[in-house]
Length: 332
Image (tube, rainbow, N blue to C red; front, side):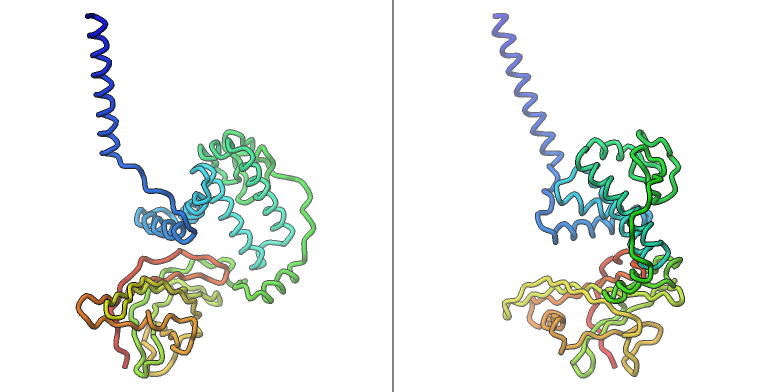
């Protein structure tokens, strides 16, 4: 009888445990599966950028988090994705520095070699990622636990112990050759932007067809803190949500175009205090049908959402603004 009582008690405990597990699973649903395509990955990263901005996280940190989010899509752990994100931001900064002439090519190559070496080591030894996640106060990609020189200057070359690397710099082309190559490739870079701040946000305030129906006009505000001589590029993103039963249309198209201030139109259609850009119907790259579709029948949908990313001549940006929905405007 005693054994039967114990067996019954064990069965009861097993049933209770199963019930508790099922209840926990019900109350704490599994996280959504990771993105399966590059587009989904970028979309998720962009959504998280908006959330981080709302939380008040500083832009420099957001850049690292964004790169880490992209790295996770390749199956990396959170720790290794964070390591890769920090290294990618460093590499981007170094690229801007050498192209703007604020860093000599040999220094650039030496520091890129330093970052790529540390990336390779992190792939060979994932424990480096875990140690890095625990802390890297000076940002040299050497975990604090292994760092014998904890106050290394930003982007300095270091050895495995985090101390300055005294090895000779690698051979490199001249600064004049780098400048010539940048111009040949039409890379946006300007020495006037070396000390310029990140351009402030801009927005689309008005959008609609021109009176002759041959252009779609966009009125965009200027970046508020633009530095004289440092050109700002305005990347406008348009999401077009269209639905029509009669036309058998159900689309959610995204289109982006980069404008320079000098491309703003002048004349009676130009709006005071802002820039007016145009997308031409004759331009085959413009999704004209999606852009100009108008809802007519009940149940039709015609919605336009706009966002803007300002980028200066050295690639510095504060990222995309939040989407804003605008109704079609009438231009005089």
